Image (cartoon, rainbow, N blue to C red; front, side, top):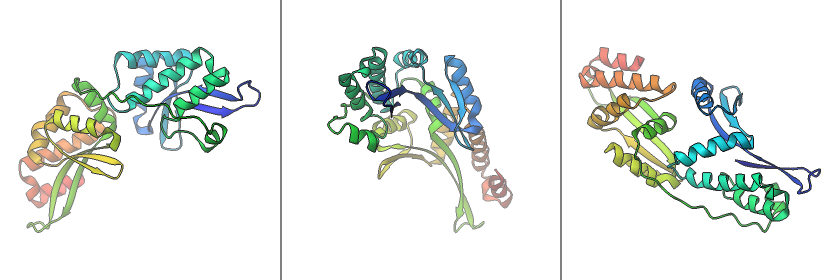
Length: 264
């Protein structure tokens, strides 16, 4: 993120603050603590009653983050945001943002990041053209990257729904990932890497669903047993596996087995 706040005491009229942030539910505090300890920079703050965030703001500390991401490139479309952020950081480091030309270049970068410019910035800089993004999709080459990505972005669902079976209800397991449509190529790469799943695009979102039971027990579950899901989601995965075992043994076709899954 590149934040700009109006400040008439400064020569350029704006205070510039770059940020690197990761926000999570407070139940995953230990993940943010692990990330903070890994980098050795930044702080963790409360962000409302149920949320926390890891925040890095100093130029020196942000250099640690940038060096890491240079060595281990981002794969999603966020890689283009990172390249722009890195360029903005260089402008700030050189103090070029303290003159009008450098400030306008920084505004041009910000216009292409995240949600773009605020109404205040659009009014103050009406002639600024958003900087062009360079999209550089990378293919998945490391299963540990995929496991880490899925720790944050995937969902393990157990659905019990009305049916015409003897019990009047049936069970379906669903593994799902949803991203913005700009990352459709990445989602197709994930589907190809796991060799399963169905891709659907709806409005501005792209969905990857895996519901075929054989794919779940032969591909999805074995993958995450070898490359571990991190955080509280690991407990969801454990419950998912328990339900899969019940279904594999056909016990979900009995009232006892169905109720066991309902409890899970």
